[in-house]
Length: 261
Image 1 (spheres, one colour):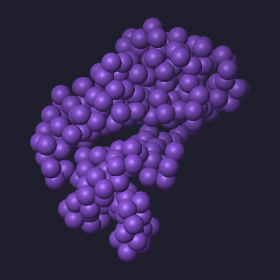
Image 2 (cartoon, one colour; image 1 turned 30 degrees about the vertical axis):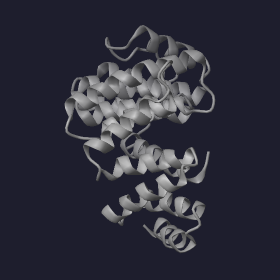
Image 3 (cartoon, helix red, strand yellow; image 1 turned 135 degrees about the horizontal axis):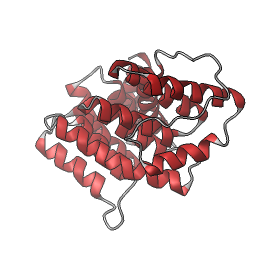
C-alpha cells in the first residue's frame, strides 16, 4: 500500500475511532454473566459470528463484552442503548473483529436512522473488507451488509456526494463480478454532474495514480487544490503526481502543504 493510500485509510480509521471510541467507559469485570444477545434486530449471521468469536476471547475481553451486553439488555432509553452499542462496536474493533464492529454500528443506524449513522455503518464494513485476515464468512457478511447501508445513507441525503463517493470507492476496492469498472464509472458520472467536487477529484486523482495515468492525476489534483488550497488530501496526492511527472517545484510546494496542513 503506498503513502497516499495510507493517508486516506488513516483518515477513515481516525474518524471511526473518534466517533466510536471517543467516550470509552469500561464496565467493572462481569465474568460469568450469561451472554445476552443485543437486540431482536440482530441477524442470524451476526449472531453466528458473535458466538464463534466469543469462544476465542480471553478473560478480560470476555468480561468487557459480556458486561456491555448485560447493561444493554437492561437499557431503557435510546441514548443509553446507542452509548452501549458504540462501546461494543469499539471493543470488537480493538479485539480485531471489524465484522462484528460493523454489526453494532448497523444496530445504531437501525435505532437512530440518519445518513450519518448509516454512512458510518457502511464505511465500517468497508474497513472490515480491508483487514489483513478475514474468514470467508466475515468477508461475505461485511460485503453483504455494506451495500444496503450505503444505499440507506444515500437515500437519506441524496443531495450529498459523500456517501455516493464512498460507495464508488467500495466498488473500486471490491468490484462486483462481471462489472469491474463500476466504481470508476460511478466516480466519473459524479464528476460530470459536479466537476468542482473536490472529494470526487481527489479520488479520481488517487485512482489515476494507482494506474500510472500520471498526467490525468496531475490535472485533477491541480484543479482540486485550486478549488480548496487547504485540502490536505489533495495536496498530498498532488505532491506524488507532480513528482511522477517531473514537476519538482510543484512537488516540493505540495509536499510542504501536505506536511503542514
